[in-house]
Image: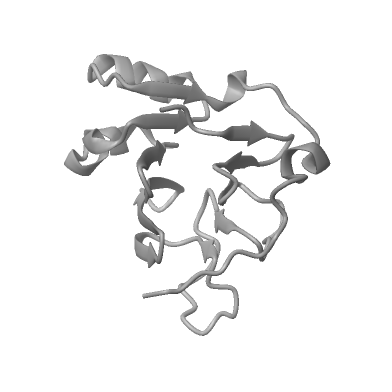
Length: 151
């Protein structure tokens, strides 16, 4: 099954529910930050910002976050009937949990080469090869606050 993914100059919108690499935190969506932003803040008002390794169960989505050398964050997302991984560090592909993803989303050829080396098939989306669109066009039917229950 194809994933709905849109790219602007700075960020990626996935399934109209996940925003990877946002330039600012949006309250209407789950923000997936590419690097560790700050120490985990349990009292932060915006719980839709995922910026630290761990497991997150957000009602309709389950997200595992891995950091490689505390540098770039890697996301394994299970959302309704879809599973996808945002992989920035090729080394994370050697974790057993990563093998269960049906779509790989990655920023460059380093990850693609590692996927080839490990003979990992399924759908691949190289972010450097996606066409860009404007923020307004990408979000015209999306900007509405989503109700999220943190469990």
